[in-house]
Amino acid sequence: MRSQALELRREARARAPEIALTVATATATALILLALVILLFDIAAEGAKVISWKFLSSSPHGLTGGGILPAIVGTVALTLLMTVAAVPAGVATAIYLTEYAPAESKLARTIRVCIANLAGVPSIVFGLFGLGFFVSTVGKGIDRAFYDGRIVYATPSLIWASLTLAILTMPVVVVATEEALRAVPREIRDASLALGATKLQTVVKVVVPEALGGVLTGAILAISRGAGEVAPIMFTGVAYFLTVLPSHVNDQFMSLSYHVYVLATQSPNVDKTKPILYGTVLTLLGLTFLLNLAAVILRAKTRGKVHAGE
Amino acid sequence: MGEKCAEFALRAVAVTSIAAIVLIVAFIAREALPVFAGTGVTEGGEPLILLTPTPLPDGSEQFLWQPVSQPPKFNIVPLVVGSLKVTLVSLLIAAPLGIAAAIYVSELCGKRQRELIKPTIELLAGIPSVVVGFFALIVLATWVQRAFGTEHRLNTLLAGIGLAMAVCPVIFTVSEDALQAVPRTYRTAALALGSDRVQMIARVVVPAALPGILASLVLGFGRAIGETMIVLLASGNASLVSGSLGLSTRTITATIAQELGEVVVGSAHYRVLFSLGAILFASTFVLNSAGERVIHGLRKKLGTA
Image (tube, rainbow over all chains, first blue to last red; front, side, top):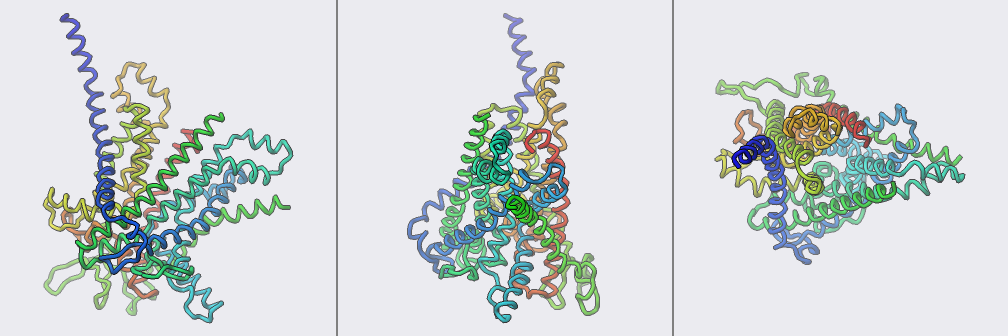
């Protein structure tokens, strides 16, 4: 009996460091998760009080009343245009890198380095770049060439904000697509080539369809990232306040993300603005959250499929 | 024929990423270089950007960022100090939490928990920074002021805490990948030699993963110093040079965000803001390149590159 108790105690002592480490690291993990939960819960609880069909479908009255329709429409238009530019470019880059570029190619390596660095450029630098390049250089050039210098394109607008965001989100598309293309088994390519298909036919009809899940994941992540950004669009097209919806690529637009910033900092009456602010945040968060969730599920599904095939 | 055309077209599109980087560098440098070189900007040929304190009428000296005074004073010391201060606070919070969570998820918890916790923390990374900034401004600000009795409601500590929420997932994800990349044989060898799990983690696994963990800190630093919306909303934006965490502070990123909308394109102020952008771009470029290098090596080891 006694020796058994001693044995137990010795064992407990030996396990003490492991328990201590587990408790300490689990606490850290719990703290991070707690921060996430508090943030989500606060926004969901306060935001849900405000969100109604009317809130989502009417125009704002100043910064203290009304809805957020122009901001929703603006965000959708912005991310749609951005996707049209970023996804084809990102997918083509990924196809070139995985299917065409020779393994030791210097060009491919340079492209990879540039994409990795592009992903790390601070978003406010994209804002500077968008203003300096798209608005004041490309826009001005177009106006000079086609409009006798009348200001049509040389002003912040939907098109320039979308293109700035497209450059920012392209690396997301490239990375996701590359991952999916790499997961396509070599044998499938070989089989296609052995059956007499050309390289292009193999890529277009066999490899890319297999990797479509990854392409879609990339596009979704890009949209979710783009919808939440503020700094790159601040100087390239987003408007402080509009009651009309954008109807042309040269129009300015409102966005949910920028509207959050405006409501949070410019309100003349904080108490009156607060509900609208929470409603806008919940709408933005719901949008990006659903998109991210879709991407996570899609990615898990496509990964499962690939593993099942092995 | 079509084959060659397709390959050519794909390569042409792939090169746009190089073009994008080159254009960003060119267009930032075009405005910033004259400022750094001190040529053709001010009439007297004096440097636009100040690094030394300006003497005041009362005999004291101060670092002044006063872009709209006559003449304007562009002393970037308060902004650089502000950015570094906020970044350091965020790393001091995010690094221990992120690395500890990575150790827990990679080494100590079960597979089920791992599969739940990892994507959840990654969801935190997907929250737009303006939302985190809003949360810091509306909710955390009150708590932080009540808990620490800070002088200003919006301050360095608050901005650091907000930033930590954005940086933590970066540090966690990269560190966790680094721990996972440590070969199984290391672990079994350590256990076979009679070490317990704590000894195995502390003396074998973590040291083996150290380059990756350091890379996570470097990338976290880069992410924090370049972050705009959180600090813009939570830091209070007063350009003070002070070591106090309870005082408001102004960062490089927030300065660009607040002032670029109101400047005349091509003016001295416009160029100084681009110079700030250049400093930001250069520092994050160096940090990210260093971090990516280590990570790339890691991925090769993991077999996912």
